[in-house]
Image (cartoon, rainbow, N blue to C red; front, side, top):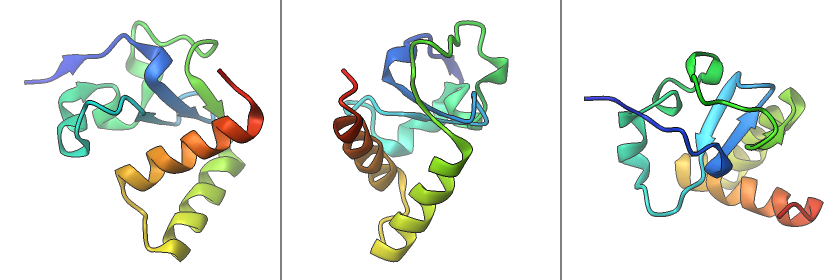
Length: 94
């Protein structure tokens, strides 16, 4: 069963919804796929998606994220969450 997540404040959106990752720490990475649109990595189909609410990153950021994590051997969902949190702190986002 798939659930529609409407809590965009816990999302990281790369390139206006091209890729979407859930940053909510209480949902285990292996459970993320149960939630739409995050399970599909595509927010274009999310009725509640609002680009102003999620943590936004550019297309260049996703390339940087994947490259950084691959080099560190952490290219998994937890690594992506950590990378996003670090970038959020660096930018001073709330």
